[in-house]
Image (cartoon, one colour):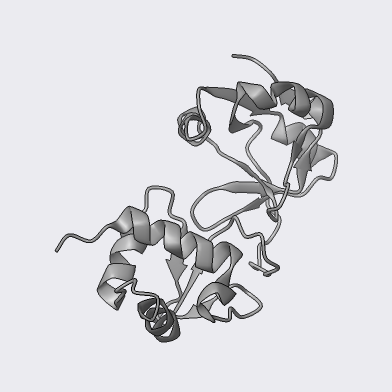
Length: 181
C-alpha cells in the first residue's frame, strides 16, 4: 500500500503546529513531540503512522516543514505555529531583499497595513522569488512582493531563519514592501 505523504503531512501540520490536543498529544516548550507518543496517539485516530512513514514525510516534504532531533526520538514543525512554542531562533542578518508570495485580493490591505503574522508567530519570507511564487500560487494567482529586508535590519528589526530556510520576522511595514508584478 502506497503511503499518502501529503495527507500525513497535513495531519502533522495540524497536530504539530496548531492543535496537538486533538489527539491528546503534548508538545514541550520548544514544540517537540515524543515520536513514540505521536505514533501511538495518531494510530488511535486511524492514521496508521510508524517511524518509517514519519521519516519519509520529514525527508520528502517539499517545504521541509518538519524535523527530528538528533536521535529521532522527537519531532517538531519548523515554523508556522499558531500555538505558543519557543523555537529557539537566534536573530541573524538577512539578505538585502526577501520575497513574499500572496494573491491579488490582499494587495490593498498589505499596502495599508504591511505584512502581518496574523495567527502565526512570524511573517514568512523566502530568499528566492520562485519559492514565493510557489507559496502564493497555493491560494490562487500569485503576486510576489519584494521586501527590503536589509533596510529593515539596519533599522533594528530582527530576522530569524528556520531550519528549513524560511526567513521570519514579526511584521513588515508597508514602507519596506515593493509592489511590483
